[in-house]
Length: 369
Ligand code: G6P
Image (cartoon, rainbow, N blue to C red):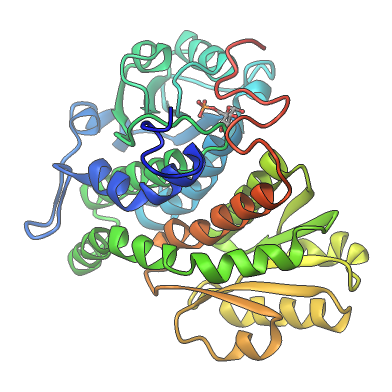
């Protein structure tokens, strides 16, 4: 096992650090930035299904569901296709309105999650075209779907999902860009720019990982908190949910993710000097609005830990701690803002002596209902 961990103390840490490589493996052969081409056979062979779809319904569970939420922003923003994101466990029992005009995308790292598999079967019964985004090759979901795209992230052993999440977002971004181009929903120059920026992401993830020491110090400061709040807007709202989930899963600290502007409808009541609030406040992503959310937290004496864009000035003046990530397009920012939140949860769990790779009560894949 020590050999498999490749010198890292835990699988989770190894997998966090594998992300630059894993994302590259995900887009290798698919993203041809110089030629301005996205090559995805699974989408190409069923282009008409996607282009004529009334809407895309995404079904998933856990972290994969969060990747689906990010995809909702990407598909609607870039490809102008309406998207609904569903918990597979709810969808399967809801008597959903679904027809052969719908495309269902099922996202699953393991490809074995029982609820997701059941949702796929239901969608197929109603005549929908089902596309899978899986990591495990030959898995049940990969076999059950009409077509698909693998994430090629390599084996993920840690129960808390990390590289599966970022590689799922990478695949979904490629699909959205391909459809945007086919539909003429994106200009040529925008399309090319997105491809170039996506190609730069692995190096930027590597740069984000360089803040590890600083993140560890932040973890030390907040490891004894009993509640934490995670806030983000737009593309980074799902990242807030994912950040909170990571902390819950492995450190057993109660954490909630919220859209930053919804804070005033409830969670703001919880804020006092005991409450760490992790805010994703990168440039472009509704920056000014998030800054004003941060002011609201500050005036209630909450502790602010902000994920900011390199070189940020405004948030630094307000926050107790800032963690920088490189600048990128807003649509690609979840691939970077997620990284410090993964490391933070990891370090807190290690400091609290928790079983990072196999947290209590959780399973890597949930094959029963
Ligand atoms: C379990 C795992 C999570 C995962 C979820 C969905 O709860 O602990 O990490 O996100 O299942 O799994 P899937 O394999 O379908 O992505």
